[in-house]
Length: 169
Image (cartoon, rainbow, N blue to C red; front, side, top):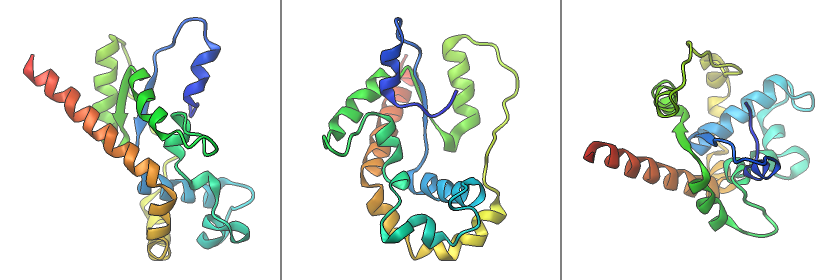
């Protein structure tokens, strides 16, 4: 359906199925930069530096995006809530395993589905074109996404733990 914050479930009378996919945070951020470079009216065709630091300040849209969608509020400093909110998710997958995880999700919910098609995907050529420029921002991207990096590790641990349960049955 899209990118919706976890708070969105409060608008439903009956709790919807929550299906979420996580992506390695630095790769997700680079993909976001490429998307801005390709599509965003303000940043289309601009140098990468202007996307990462428009007006000399870091672009907040690149900061801990996955944590914010899971309920993190900068003013509250409530990262622990993100970790708790993982338990609200009925299915957690990884974009790195998209086909396998979508098949697992379909199987878990007993859905029938046809072949899916990924959209809005950056090309290898686009990535190669900015690869060298991005390297100089690697540490910045890690600092901007410290919480997402922690969240991603928690997600990997949760998935690994869940997979162990499946193999024990």
